[in-house]
Image (cartoon, rainbow, N blue to C red; front, side, top):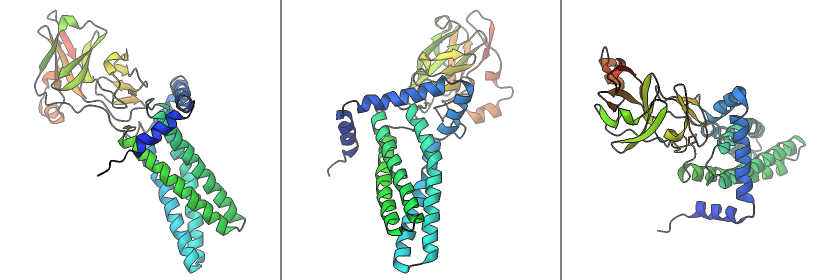
Length: 326
Ligand code: FES
């Protein structure tokens, strides 16, 4: 059976347009700089639009509203055409208006995801945005035509817009399934039950981070003056190396798109990430840095939990266990 190469073909075509890929990436970078450099308010707006508060990309949830209502509107237009029903005409126009209104937050959330997308994906995302904007413009023209009594023109315009929106939705699927935009990139913790020694304690100075392997999973280990933390090293947003990130307090900032995670439990403090990092416990004990996978059941069953007690550092002193997992 022939394989579908439409996505890579479209991407190749976009990259052959002089300046398109560079411009697409430049717009994304400018947007991202405005969010990450705009202080706390800009960061909060970014978190809301990414869906960090929701634990799921917001754009993926919102796009169903305009696409669904526009499709339903097209059906009612068809019914109105066949039956001359006034109710069907009213429903078609109301659904079309609802689609236009709900497209605005969906577009804003999409633009925010575009700002933090990988360079390989930005040309296709830019095309996705251009097509969606064209569709929205045609839907608005359709509404205007309907209001002026030119219903036939209005219906033709909305059918054209829906065709463009459907093509753009296909591109959105390609971005998700082929480029993995909006997909959780964090590794699933390997079966690392029980404490596993990953480093000599002397090899991890206070304020330093290291990447170690636990089973087949990359784990970032960080040691502060008070505690040792461990969390999945592969960023859930797009796979960035958290062990190369910047640590402030008990939070680490990803070097790729500046998502911030709390190393104590892996939760997302700031997007673009929407999903947490895998949880591990970590301690310095008997001259070794040890980690183990976090188990909710184990944590609630153990009282007092051994991991809740201070560990021993490489000098034989007790050191707080951190990295409450992930
Ligand atoms: S890879 Fe994008 S924020 Fe980490």
